[in-house]
Structures are given as C-alpha cells and as structure tokens.
Image (cartoon, rainbow, N blue to C red; front, side, top):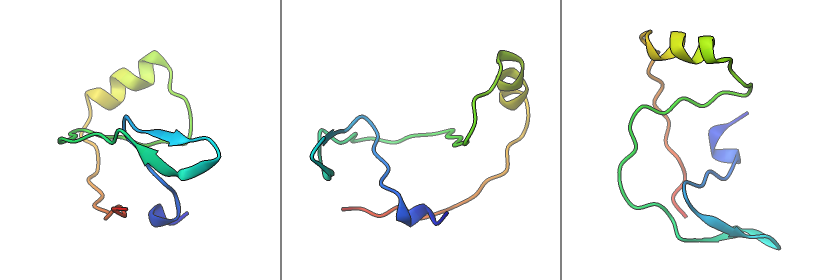
Length: 63
C-alpha cells in the first residue's frame, strides 16, 4: 500500500457521501505516531512504549 493512496484525517469529519470533503481538520503538531494494521494487547502496547521504534519518514498529501 502506498501511503499517498489513502486519505488520512486527524480530528476531521468527512462528509459521508463525499469522503474527500472533510472539515474541522486538526491544526497543530503530532508526535509519537504508530500506525498498525492489527490490534495490540495491553502487554504488547507496553512493550512498544518501552522500546525504541524505527523512524520512517513519509510525506502525506495536503489537500
């Protein structure tokens, strides 16, 4: 999956009929983001919080 193929919203509401029509976007900075495609147990979350995570830089589209 290419990161630029998926719309990513933070604290935004999308129009149900037109998902690309969003409003109320988050204005600010976000730190310590981890995106996964599965659910984690409490133990796994604790292990992630206590470990050094790899840094992957990617540019998100700005519509």
